[in-house]
Length: 249
Image: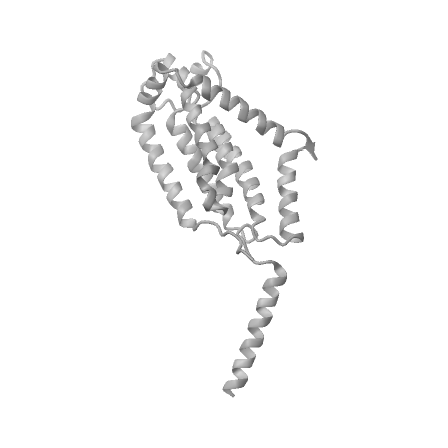
């Protein structure tokens, strides 16, 4: 029987968090405005990314919000039920991936939306329209009376889609790159469509990485042998230990 796949080492998550954090700071201080200006002047990829984002959003809405169960989106309830089924009935050591997706997804969205309200950064199209030259954080109430009340930092789209695929990519590292193609495209599309700066996307990914790392440490998230198998191993170890002691005596 083939062994169950094991998650990638947690240090790889730490590398991802460090990389997105450092690159996010560089983008915030140096790259955001030049890249936004360049993308504003080059519109060739906008139709592709507009179609892609619209289609992906439609699929996501259909899968997660097709109904409410106890005032909760049906997709979230299903993820939790599948985790319970796999963990406690089928005794699958990798069932924790469903709970990790759920916890990462929900908490990432909450964190990102709270940060949006705190930083009050306008989107690139508004940023360029008003000729801003700084980071654009903490715009005054007077500014928002003349601009759309729609904040940019960090990107909720980038966080949402990475939070659904990064846990699976971590559990199944053999398939990580195919799994991460869609979140990468969504992140790129947010910049091409002038809805987010590069730092908005990178810091959204940074937040997802931190939240996922924290929840990955829960004991029922990380793959473990089924309960019965653990009991059998413990009993066998005890018998072997007693046998060895008897031989020594």
